[in-house]
Image (tube, rainbow, N blue to C red):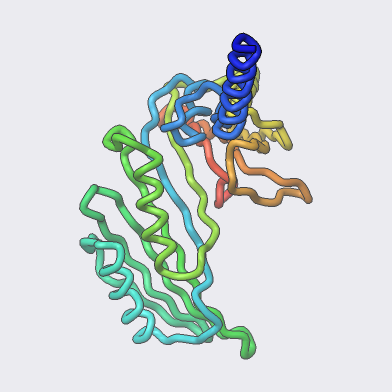
Length: 253
């Protein structure tokens, strides 16, 4: 009887451990859980990350504002993001379109470029906000914490928009197509991503895929994608720029 009770307790304990291991399994499967998924993918590239960039575009409302109103909105954004201005407020208006743009720097060194624009398209009003940020990744002790804080501040400015995150680095010289294909294959394997589309054109390449490790998604030719690896050869500097982005590169290649 005692042996049976002991075995039953051991069985129950084993089942609990199995349940907990399934419930809290790390979806990165052996990767450092403190890493941002793109960091994990970048390991396959084997080069230092030069900088991290974010690109966000969001609609603020269905209203029309002139330059004066947009400048007032800009002042609030400067305060909310804790920016020290690096440029004047650049303004302009033409026909039924007005804008305000400026650049500032946060206390941690993040460079922030902001564009506010308002348009009147035959009575259809819309005001939008675009924000680009650039930061030297070598100075960031923890990328996930940095991105969480940065995007929280950006999203507080209005309804959550579309945010693209890019890691950038450089290779001295020109990479062959075979090497680029091998590089993209290793990167996508690291991210557990399926290749959706690939293209080479005039010194550039793009490789789009889908990974279950990344939450954000975008649509490309009726397919879901959320990771993109691009290369651009700069002949003047004799370097190949490498960009790894999620969900895509906002400006294409």
